[in-house]
Image (tube, rainbow, N blue to C red; front, side, top):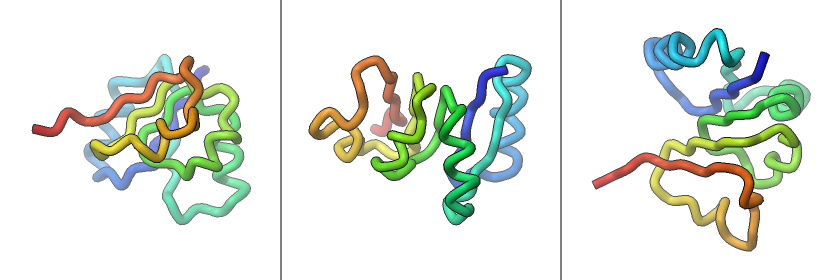
Length: 96
């Protein structure tokens, strides 16, 4: 099964809506921003999709990553200097 990692501070209801839409294609794991480094490493190692804003350095721990959905509009920290390889889809909210 493919892994989807949630790193954003969503309500339990929002997480359940994501689970309902993603499963059974994805195993959904919630990783709080204050989690232990080993837990973070394990989550990144298998994640194909990340929802949230990982540290730029943590992206090196995510060799399976194909798509990252950030929860704010600014993407500069991820797009500057080729931080995200072009084969990884980076999406953001459409704010008006």
